[in-house]
Amino acid sequence: MEEIFVKEWFSKQLKLVFHVYPQAKNVEIEVIDLKHPVLEQYMYVIKNKWSTRIGTSAYSCTHDDLRGNHWEAFLICKENGVLFELWKKNEEVIAYEVYK
Image 1: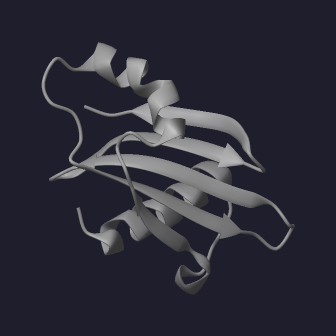
Image 2 (image 1 turned 180 degrees about the horizontal axis):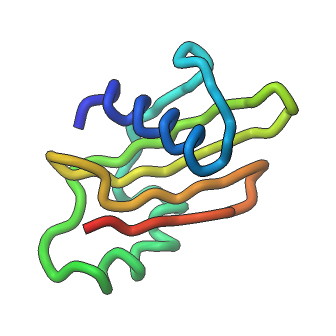
């Protein structure tokens, strides 16, 4: 999964779901371990959805908006898309989604 796709996914979801409009230069992205502590907390949700091997990579994306809110998303990806996303606003989990 390319980092450009992940950055675009994060920005698109932030706009569509939360009505926050980041500029690409204000979005930070980091490759993280699939065993990252935040992801480990939600791994049971993912494992209940699939019996096959899950994601191949994981990312953390962050953005600080003009209102002072800190947005963060953790994404688990596979070769052709996103499997799981977890959203935090100001360190509080506000949403997650599991995709097929």
